[in-house]
Length: 207
Image 1: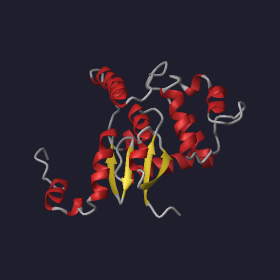
Image 2: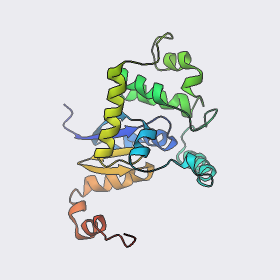
Image 3: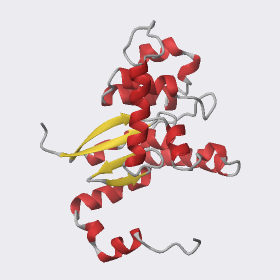
Image 4: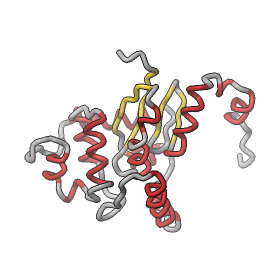
């Protein structure tokens, strides 16, 4: 045991923001973060949400922002052949292999540094992860069920997209919440403060 505060990071390799987050996770070195693969499409559907790739005007804006953000952070970045693409097989593989950070990062690198869709070069993707070239796409009921369970748990934990860091039952969603999480660690009573408590329960004027 590390003695560090435990946290969970829900991710899907489809997300460029999750990739950029993973590349900066050392900023949160004072917590022990467990990477947990989910299916972003399922999470978005469960929370009545849509990804930026599904909104015509938002898609180019978001993609170009990712290019700018990567440049700003000095992180290698290249869009895959097409995006979005289906990540079910890749996410199931990461579940099956109980992927720790080294493999998780390699999976992200394959998409966001090599610029490839694992579905189009599955054997190469497996080799890239350190697995055998003849590794089959996972089809076991247990692996399928575990990915669904992870996705449902992400929703239960308050996640509505990725990357989502769950820390002390608080959800910090998105690349730009790393600083917020760091401030919370330095000020653990933050969410009990009057302004935060009120913000959580502001009446909805549209209902």
